[in-house]
Image (cartoon, rainbow, N blue to C red; front, side, top):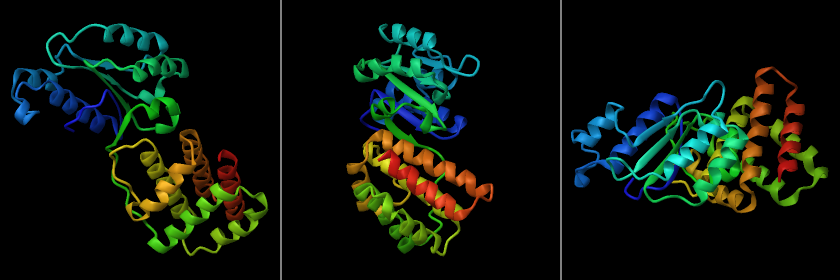
Length: 268
């Protein structure tokens, strides 16, 4: 992480993303620049012990991070670092930010200050608004997901979904539903793959340095990214997630595929 950005989204469990955010703070403020983070300079030790004045934690008040908290953060951003090179603001459970709070933060993300870094910690990207996501670098520290189904099947499904993006013809849905129904894989595994595929499209769309889960489908992923807006990608993830819930409730499989394809068609 040699070139430090002004804003990040760290995805994953709270403990892991907090650890990575503190490591970023150490990298930005380490006194031994040739070996940062060294872990033993005064700055690194203060950050590790959570007593560094330039590392600010923001937690939800009750169920959410509220607009008043973000406004206070914005006022604080105008102040220069007390001891270090950079001030680092860590927003825990950032997906709990109210829409008003996210919109208030947006202007700061669009016009960043060179002496500050904002890190949003989240386990749920869907609850962050697309404009906030698009202005942050995404780092995924969640457990690596391994593809469960073969490359040929995944490629066939990806091409089927890409066809929906290009054609947008409701008359073709019946044939596509049949194609999915005849796939020799469990519906749950197919939907988990589809979610991972759109997750990779989101990574491509936001120019994140995070590795693709489906790296063997890279060319298709970039075709999706070129065709879909950021909001459409997020909505596609939501559509697939809803149908995954339906499979776990033992819903009618043909209806699940129909609802999936209809939903994906509507968000394009």
